[in-house]
Image (cartoon, rainbow, N blue to C red; front, side, top):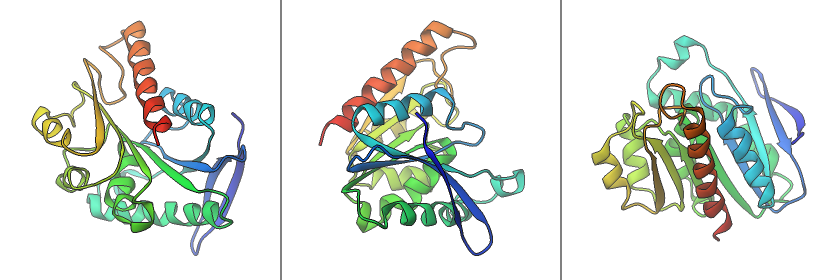
Length: 214
């Protein structure tokens, strides 16, 4: 799964991204978590599922210091979109892609929910939210009011999990998958290796279904 490493220069910095180009017509933009990057299991296998389903992939490489991470969700959304927007524009500018998918984990769900889901040009895009930060009211409300198709996965031992919220979100167009005994990394228990792999496999099956249905 080797991609082309690219860099785009904005006013004040260089933004790096990896573009796995197979010549497909759909592109999936992926947004990593804080400390949960693209070689970790959820992203590694999500990338594999995309390629298996004829979807090109972009990994956007960003990282933020502790000070930035203490900012409000609204401020964080803007900071992240300043890194993400130039990459999306760069990748989409030559018109080779007809469809787009957005996939984020944890921190990476913030720009999807608070910005990209609210944009007219991405109304038909599928949104995949792995362990979204549902404790934030703005994140929860945005998901609840969105019309998008897609998938939301969270563990019931995740500190962002709230069963009342999940009940409400099940009325949205997103398929909701709650992983039993899974934490914020979607690992099961403390060191339950086999159960964690089974859970990961199930998440990938749900992702496969989501990507495959048009």
